[in-house]
Image 1: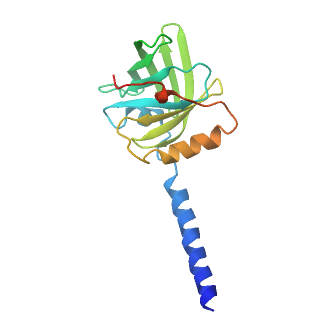
Image 2: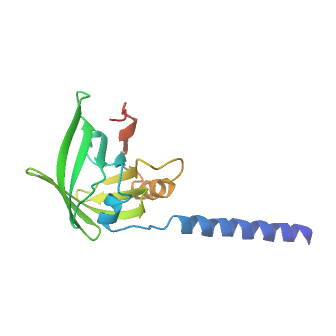
Image 3: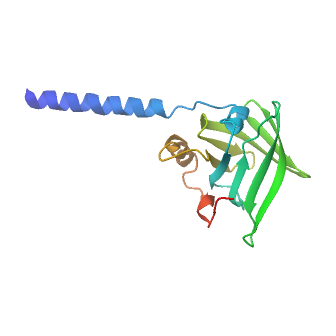
Length: 169
């Protein structure tokens, strides 16, 4: 009888833990505007990507004093010779969709998962995925985004772009 109670107690604890874990990993943001502009400071870093030829150390400053749905976003990255480059992209956001334009180049994507002010996942229209985390994220803050990114990209070639000799610029 005592053993049965222990098994029952353990089962309830495990099931409760699974329910809590699942609840903790629900998306709290799918609007592109909220994903990119919150919190209203710092920058978002592209941690992982399945896109072809993503930029090393890529980060985008959180746009401030912008009017929805348009925002100018300063993007900084290291080029193939290790030099820092900065460009200002024009973003247009409608619901979960993002259109980013720099001159003649246009990139499109959809925010498919996010944790408010911490991280988000973008599914690009070329089929690739990007995991973005806010500069204020600490420790395990972005675990839910990492888990969802891993689920979406199983079997794909993933690059960790912030592990390529990126210093704070």
